[in-house]
Amino acid sequence: MPQLQWSDALVFELPAMDHTDDHFGQEDRWMQDTRFSSTNCHSVQHKVVLQVMREGIALAEAGDPSAIRQVARELAI
Image (cartoon, rainbow, N blue to C red):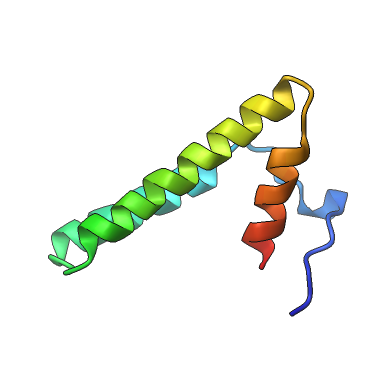
């Protein structure tokens, strides 16, 4: 599977995680509205991914970008 190569063309100049928060929130609302049977499990997965992203960003802001780089590699897969 090809890996995503970062370039400035991929920069949206949006605050970190705005799109992901919005996307997961919309998906959670759809699951609730349609009584999707796996709502609880999938919503928990959303929360876990957002928490990992927040922790990675905090580490990167503190000078250790390795965690957020690993998150980016995993998301690209």
